[in-house]
Image (cartoon, rainbow, N blue to C red):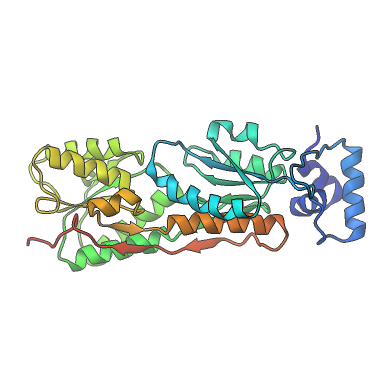
Length: 321
């Protein structure tokens, strides 16, 4: 069966225009509307799905990497609070199920935050004419809007604070190969370079965003003759894993080693974790709002940056130099 891109190519218009026509929006001229509908009919395109009494589909997809982390809870809460009040429903799925559930006849849009979903999978959803909000990457596509965290600026603030406190010996635990991870690590390295602080390859550890990565990194650090003053982790879950293993083995945080994260998930506040705080509830709320604005024709596809700021807590003390 023909798709929305086929219609757009044959009509000589954008995918966005075709989507607007098929979703009965009024921001397309009568001549263009007639042309698109005619071509859709000729190609046998089916656009059946309607779930509301006003003829609008009211289900959106929210796709995460997995469901075993606290990281997603505030984001999902924010999304749900906004879209439910507007009469929309949420379908949660992981990357493996995205292609199956992203049927334009059944759903009206998608919000994605998943390091396991490839760019090509996101673009395939957008090619169907579904507006997509990405919370973890920027992609060039007329149906994709990025709402991303100011990772670089947030990590710079953290590193500058640590250096100002007198720390000059660091280890870094990365996450998976994502845009978020690259920006955070770049900020970490840039501050050290600007301050003339050396950083060696054996001080870099590779993780996967999960708590067990922190546990493994703490285990490796404890085998060294001399531990670094600070372990900076690319997210809170890994930092929490490292702290837990240090403490279980008699290593004091922050007296023996300071530990920092990124995200400021709920449990981090109770553990006193120094981290970069991302307003995840508001992030989800704004993502839901942006998606519905796209659906009613009042939104835009410009990239939206969400600010982050340092939360200095007890797991990063003062340098003991």
